[in-house]
Amino acid sequence: MVDITHKSNTLRKAVATAKLKVSSLQTIETVLAGKVPKGDVFEFSRAAGLFAVKKTSDVIPDCHPLPVEYTAITHEIEGMYIIIRVEVHTIYKTGVEVEAMHGASVTALTIYDMLKPIDKGIEIENIRLEHKSGGKSQYQLADQEQLKCGVIVCSDSISKGEKQDRSGKAIVRKLASYQLETNHYDVIADDFKQIQQKVADLVEQDFDLLIFTGGTGLSPRDVTPDAIAPLLEREIPGLMENVRKYGQERMPYAMLSRGVAGFIRATLIITLPGSVSGAEESMDALFPAVLHVFKIQKGAGHD
Image 1 (cartoon, rainbow, N blue to C red):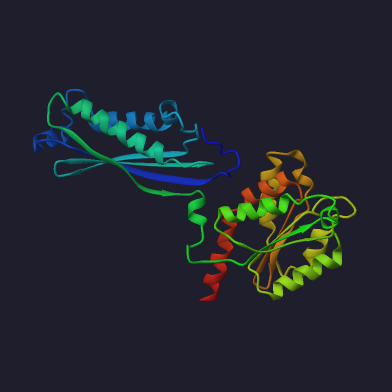
Image 2: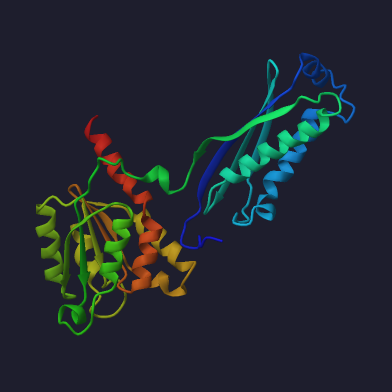
């Protein structure tokens, strides 16, 4: 089973359909008249479909058990066809496409079973996913969009060569996983003025995104948020609130992080913890949803 512990809960929806074809209009008339010997076709199949949606992880080995928050199953008659539509919602870490398709397939099979005594020519023609939403795919930038990104490591020991950087390189890898190139990578000391100067230099170079890692804790030399916060023109508190919430679910000390985030002109600046796990988890908490700010920014520019 795929590890989804790094993912965040989001609202996810899926719609699946199944088409069942009968061999005569008499079968359709019998269904509509409620005279099928085995009972009410629509109600029985709807109940079966609801059970199937909720039991998907019991029969599909790699599907995660998840909270099904909403399911709607409808039937529509089109000539000799019975069209089944299943819509499923959840707020969870993974989608409900398989749940919707499983529900559609079992609904169709139930109708098949109920009608086969009166119609030997029934066929289930297809089961398909019509629509899905939620998850990281909806937050991705368009293929043609490029962001100018920088990663800056704030650490006395790394800048002196006493330790090797791991968190900054982990952030670079995370950015690459979202097809974002790191155009600038640097290591500087935990120095208030040096951090502010680095911010000023890179903002002047029109960077879209700057990620600072290190110096967000409570030791005397942790000054990254103190240096950057006064420079922010538009703070975005929700970004770091989400990082701390995400981290708190995995490590109780995440509440001690003092990271800040916001815009200086058109440059988004984010400050992340200096530990490898803290940096990686923070990236997981923010990306790819944080990329939406650049869509908003470009959209506002056309108003």
